[in-house]
Image (cartoon, rainbow, N blue to C red):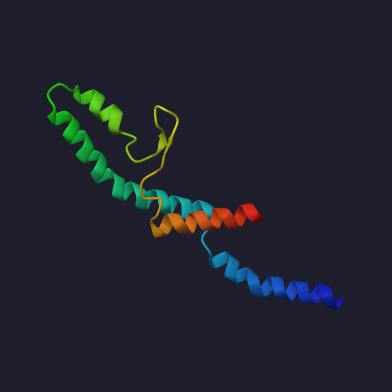
Length: 103
């Protein structure tokens, strides 16, 4: 009986602290918004540089650089890391994802 009361009391004490923390989805959305804010000027710069070469098709430049900074695989299979994954918002999301996977 006493252990149930103690468990309920601990749950009620820790519940507000858990409710104040952002969810994993919110952290990932904040990370992505911060990354995109930094990536957009770089994408525009790469597209403009590509279009400045008169041998390139402007539509091709738009398609080729639309995913700039998103990472992926190199033609020989090596991974290309995403840019700006070291932003504080992304580090917080990574830590939350790591904590969730350990449960």
